[in-house]
Amino acid sequence: ALSGRSRRIAMLASVLRSSVSLTVAPRACRGNVDRPTPVRALTIRGRCPVGPAASGRDDAGETSRLGRRQSAMAIATVLSGLEASSYFVRADPGAGQGIPAVTHTVFLDVGLCDSIVRADRALGNKGGVCTSPETLGRITIGLYGNLVPNIVRNFVSLCEASPGEGYAGTVFHRVKPGEYVLAGQAGSYRLGQVQTPGFDSNPEMLSSASFRERHLRPGTVSLAVGAATGEGDSNGGYTSRSAGTEFLITTGPAPAPSLDGENVVFGRVLKGMDVVTRIAAVPTFRPSGNSIAWNQVAEWLRDERAAKARESWSKPTQAIVITNAGVLTRPDPVT
Image (cartoon, rainbow, N blue to C red):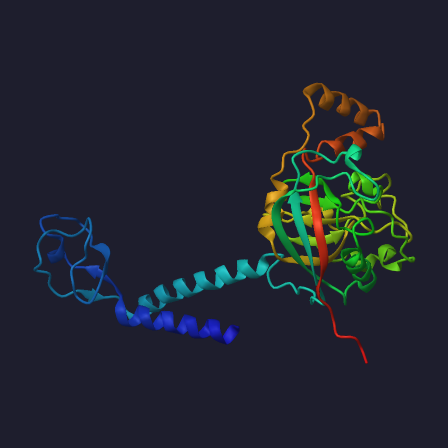
């Protein structure tokens, strides 16, 4: 990468030397305008400058070139600008940072119902979402199986499971435009939630190493363990035996630093960010002015119900349903 940049800089310097020379325009080029000092202008190969300092006359005499030292300084200024630009690119926290390798790819097909989930729609083993949702599209997710293998394995199993046992038929239950969308809440399938799968104890959810990846890019996929769930104490009330089904996808365009350190990044969206954007555009319930005021009072009084009430403010007014889910690729089995 460095050698390629050096070649581009050398080419630019060559163009500057061969095509353009910085000169001092002689008095003859300035027509009838009499100035006490020369006017600096950009002159190309002996022609008089074009602009405010030029007149309609084309009888320019010779131009005097700047010395080698001044030309070198001009080129150095351009090159130093390029160096400064490359520095600021490198200073970006997301630039140049290693992205974990993708080991599995899965998909989520998403649709939109005309209203919220209704338990009275549920018959037998069917959920309470509409039967013919409007198609929003497919989200393809790459998973970091080498980074957090247990979390990835559990997520894959929920993508493969039949409706009523995994993600198929469940909903995105929280929408925060500019931050994230949230799905996979454990609970009753009649309410569009994931039935608790009873995973084995997962030490990754208690390891600090699992929380090192940051939510820098749109489409970051992470296990909702803390900030997104808001279920009580500092780690969201999770233990090593918690459900581990709730996941979030960041919407961008900016990073979401409030999610860092409390949620486990385990993948990224490979295709379908337009679908994530459409999910984030679904309207949510809006509280009244009185509700906001009373919630602030409850917050000052340290009433835990205030945080719970605020969670309902980001609940979508329509059911955003995962109509289907599955696995596209996985590593070859070790023989």
